[in-house]
Amino acid sequence: MGKQDKSLKSQNQPYILAFIVLFCAAYVAFLVAPENLFAEFRNAFSQFTAKEGVFATALPLLALVLCGIISANGKARLVFWRWKHPLPGCRAFSHFAIADQRVDVSKLRRLAVVWPETRAEENRVWYGMYKKYENVPKVLDSHRCWLLSRDLAAISFLFFVCGTFGLVLARGDVKWPLTYAFMVLCLYLVLLVVARNHANRFVGNVLTEYIAGEKQDADADGEQKAGGDASHPYRGSI
Image (cartoon, rainbow, N blue to C red; front, top):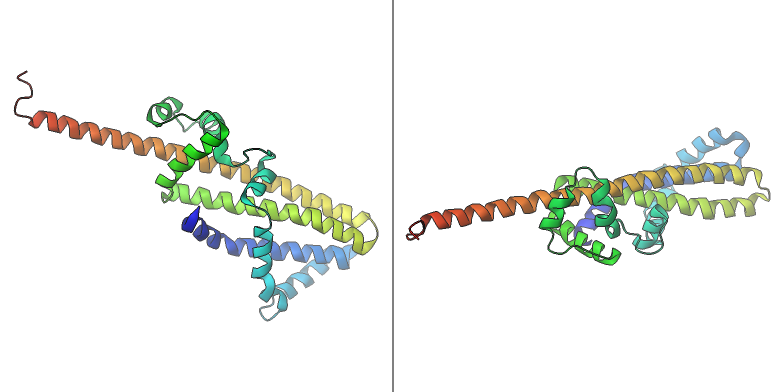
């Protein structure tokens, strides 16, 4: 989504970096001394957050890899569990417009230039609406929250799969790797719900802004036409 998308991602970076630090500290604690988990977690966390440490230097690179290794479509699949047309805009009219009580579907039908019939068309039409109102504060904020929660869900999924496999190989048992896997899986499921809710809000905010904006434009055009008719020298005598 262009420069705006990059700006939102830069705003989200501090939260993503903090999330990765916490995850890495927890992973090291499970790897080194799971019997003394919290003490080892605090020790690892203090080392990872040291300003002069190697990890602090490499952290932005690690965040770049973790956020970029899965595509936008792949992240949406991890959130919505749909392989085809996973992006939230693909269900903007068939699902979100109906589910969001703020959206007046009848007005949306009247104002929309074309009513989409397929998932791909839904995403294209909704994206066109988004581009028109992308700088509206509530659209910006909901978009940022969607990107952040989506990335956190994807990162937690990577730690679930790769971390569990790594612990099994490193420790040679399954007790603590399974404990780690259960905890990370629970976190992933929580973040999945959070990301879905923010996606719903994001899509709904765009639709409500479109309805309000197009209605104002239509009212303004009507007033201009009415004013032009009243000023016409022959109007009213015919």
